[in-house]
Length: 354
Length: 184
Image (cartoon, rainbow over all chains, first blue to last red; front, top):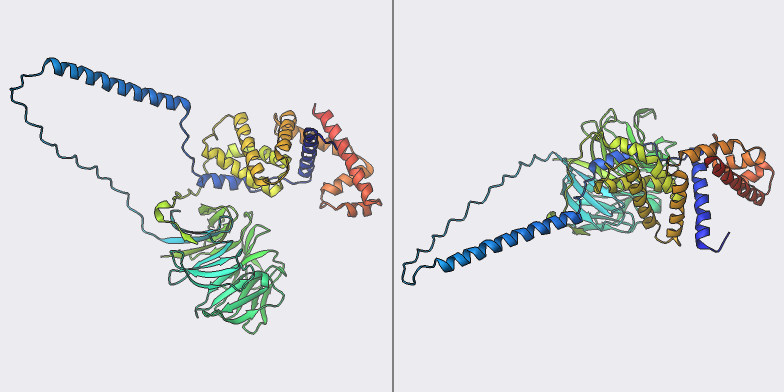
C-alpha cells in the first residue's frame, strides 16, 4: 500500500479491473434481459430538444440586427421624404383611417379525445408517489409525498387506499389527497385491501401479522403464526390468501386460523392472487417471474425474465399486468407486451375499467 | 401528500408496443462495454445494470444515439461515470479512483471494450496450477461452483484462512503480470 493518493487509486483501479474480469469469467455479466429493458425504456423516454448552439444564437442575433437596421433605414427615408413633400398647413387632411376590424382568431380544433376505457393506478416506491394513467398513458392523477408507496387501490367511492411502508401507515384519501381515514398502529406494511363489509385487511409485514380493522380502528381479526406477509387477499369463501416470505410459501387460512391450502417453495413471493378459475397467480420478485398454479400446484402459465416484479394481476381480457422495477407492462397470453408505462420502481399496479 | 394541479402534470405519450429497430443494434454494440466499465468503477452488478440503462436514456434525451460508435462510447462512459459518482456521494476521493479507472480503460480496454483483456485473463487462469488454481477458482466461483468464503476455502485446501488470503494476493499479482504481458 502507498500513501500517495494517485498511486493508491491506481492500485485500487487495477484491483477492480481484475475483479471485474474474474467475476465475468465466473459468469457475472449484465442481466440477460438488460438489452430489452433498455429498449423498452428508450421507447417511453422522450428526447429533449437540443439546446441552441452558439452558431444558432449568432445567426439569430445577426438576423434580428439586420431586421432592426432595415426598419431603421426605411423609417429614416420615409421621414425625410415626408419633410420634403409636406403639404401646406391649410390643405385638408386625409380623414383618419377607419379602424380595421380585428382579424378573426384562427380557430384551432383540438383533436377529439378518445373515450376513456380504463385507468391504471401505479404505486412507485422509489419516487414516493402514486399515479393514475389512462389507456393512452396520459396522467390523470398524481399524488406525491406518499412515503414508501407500496400499495394503492381505487375504492368504489373513488377514494384511494394507500399503504405507506416507510411511515407505517395505511390511509384512505380522496382524489385531492385529503385524508379521510387512517390506521397507523403498524410496522412497515406492504399491502391493504378494503373489504366488502367496509373493514380493511392489512399485511402488517414487519409486525408479522395480517389484520382486519374496522372503521373505528379496532382489530377484528388477525393471523400471526410464523409469517412475514407481503400480500393478503380476502377470498370469496371467507378465507385469507397470504404471501409469506418468512417460510417462502403462499397459504390460505380459514377465519379460525387453520391452513386450508398451501403452496411451498415460493421464495420471495411478493404477491398472490386467487383467480376466478381457482388457480393462483404468484409474483416472485427474486426469481423475476410470475407463475400461475392450479390447485394441485402445477404451473399452467408463466412469465419469465421479468425485472424484479412485485405485483401481477390477471385482467378480464386474459392478459397479465405486471409491476416491475422499471415500469408496468401488460402481457398477452403469449407473453407479448401489449401496453407499458415506464416508472422508476413500480411495486403495485391495478387496472380499473370505466 | 399533495395533489399536483392538472396543468402542472407532464403527460407521457402512449408507448408503442414494439421496439424501434434502429435502437437495438446501438444497445447491443455498447451495452457490455459500458456495463464492464461501470463494474470497473466499483459498481455492483445490479447497480451497473441500472446505470447502464440510465446512461442510454440520457444519450437518447441528448439526441446523441446516432453518433459514430467511438464518440457514443465516450459519451456513454462519461455519463455513466457521472451517474455512478452521484450514486456514491459519500465515498472518499471517488474522483481520483474514477480518473485511474479511466486511465486504465484507455490503456487496456478502449480498443475492444476489454474483450482482449478478458481473453488474456482466461488464458492466464488456465495456466495456473495446484492450490493457486483451486484458490482462485473457489474464491470467484469459476466453473460450476458458487463462490466460497475464505474460511471454507481454507478448510478444503487444508490451510489457515490467513494463508488463503496471502495465496490469493500472490495469485492476483501473478494474474495481473500475466495479463499485462499477454495484452501488450
